Length: 70
View 1 (tube, one colour):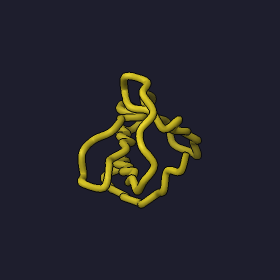
View 2 (cartoon, helix red, strand yellow):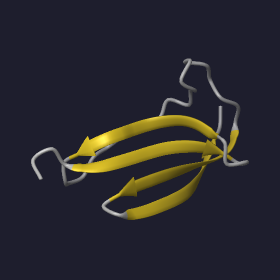
View 3 (cartoon, one colour):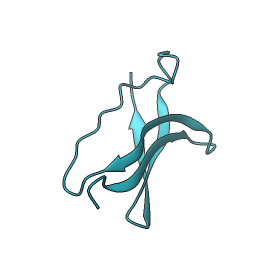
View 4 (spheres, helix red, strand yellow):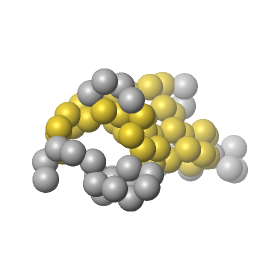
C-alpha cells in the first residue's frame, strides 16, 4: 500500500474523555516519533494528572498510561 495504513493516535483524560487527536490518517510502515505538547486542540495547556494515549494501527490497539506534570 503506497499510501500507508490508517493510524489513529489520541490522548484521553482519566475519565476517558478525548483530549486531543495527534494523528488520524495514513502512515507508512516503520518507526515514527510524535510529541504531545500538553495542550488541547485550542492550544490551551491541560492540567497535570494521569492521561492515556491510544494507538490504533495495523488492526491493533494499544493503550498506555502517562503522567503529565507541569
